[in-house]
Length: 413
Image (cartoon, rainbow, N blue to C red; front, side, top):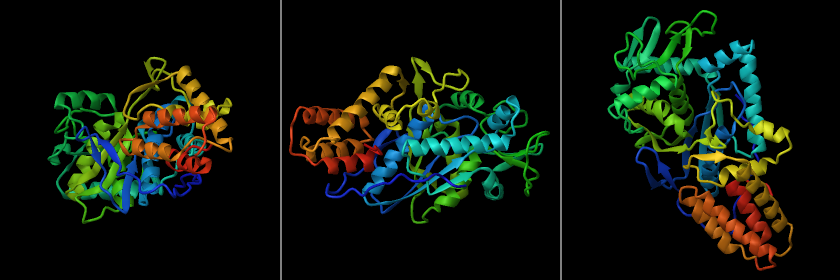
């Protein structure tokens, strides 16, 4: 599947070597240095395309865009893969509710997502893979898991024994009772009759009446959710056999820690004998005016709607980045107004021929980003520089700072 056109990403020159990047690893709950390498493998879970890109989606992909940009600016290559769950129960349910063809619905929402990513200047993944195009890949992974004795059937459906991985549960730090409760809320079936463990997950669903299915050695059906990402990540990121883990970074929203990423890691360990990721990174949740933003509440704010209403995508980007990616936060009119004002003032400053000193500002921005993407510190630094510039201070390089903000923060000013 085609991703989206890349925003021009200028090389960062004349600012010296970037500090080593540190990120919060969800598995340890600690800020850890990311090992310096010449090439990184990063997998970020994509959308289920049954509605447009809401601000929670946008915040997640902006987080990993910052990581991608920082590693690239440091001189490394980043192999970046993202999936699209273009066949799943929520998609089929939405299509049935709205009397739409499920494939047409998925296509329209994927196209809208691409345009949102272009507007927000998110660098595209190297591989953008749909579950439907990965059917054969998933089927082979299920076969491989079966050969290791970790698959069993309930009727014509196939389930994976999560506890066949000795580390199952170590990412989410939850008790079995907590995992079962969350699993039931997030697409799982812990109380299904015939399961060996409530936490075993579906990897191949036999075709249901009125639903699509694909031929495989496992019968006609479709993939389970977690095995889709495991199979795509291992195939398209091609882990280095010399590494102690399969990939460098696995990421997504914090709601994916369990069950999704926990179960992906379990499957990957059984398939490879290795930890799936060296670092698990998760972006916090976005609420709206004091309430959790969710599909069930109907209070989602969509990027495309804001842009269609004439809002500047860079103001959206600024507003979402102004708070720390690990902090659950609210989208409010005040937050958005702050983003718009910050964008206006930055553009005013960059229109001037003479600006306040920039070398210390650039160094502070790089230091802040290197320490777990500390964007609040970045914007405090920029606000101070803008204020000094608009006061008439001189001695800085307008173009150098603009290039740094483009390359590291994705801001078109």
